[in-house]
Length: 72
Length: 248
Image (cartoon, rainbow over all chains, first blue to last red; front, side, top):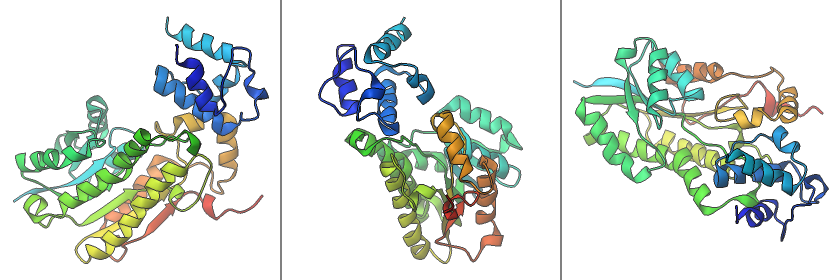
């Protein structure tokens, strides 16, 4: 999980991310960015997530929780 | 005297599997894929399962195809009369997220493996004079653009350009064509169709509504048959009219 913030920032194509960031409030957030994040979840964590599931994860913290929860 | 087979890559699922099932009544098949279990399942769903051969091989390993195919054909004195490349991968991504590893894998599976297989299948020392026709399962992304489709479209465009020159070079004995499907719901495209708003908006654009894998299988059946004897070098679009639709 130590790479999580860096990899997520890369997927969204911004310098850094933090827990409080709301995805939909980011300028870069569009349907293609969603696909980049989905691809990152698959390649880095082996997780399959669909666009409508991702919609429910509002913030970076929500996404991190989702990944941590799936590892249990 | 070799038995003649139709080689189908990507036979473990989706369009490749559907093609296999449709051709199984009239042809002996070589079913290629990565997943032995799913290949067995395809074979069980075919007519006359005992006539068909499973060739489990990961096409991403392009360098190893030569030895593997040679072993397969030699061991049972098999000849390949028709080659259908239905193996493919799709990963819709903004181009800014592409990387060299993904790009190489894309081209290996979608293009280079097919190219290498044909190189081998036209060599007399490997496949005698058996090859009669080739069909590539391409995509409308070969001819048209879409967001996130840069690499996928590049591989399908490459496939179709290869198809055209091979059609000329290998004539008159061998015909080479491509089928360009529109969006069809299969295991490969599941993640696209699971995005409901996207799927709904997609389907509104299709004058004939949604298509199925069997629509592609029927087109393949026609192209490898004697009824298509004067057709070569063609991109046959099978997409329910989507790509001619410019209505708002």
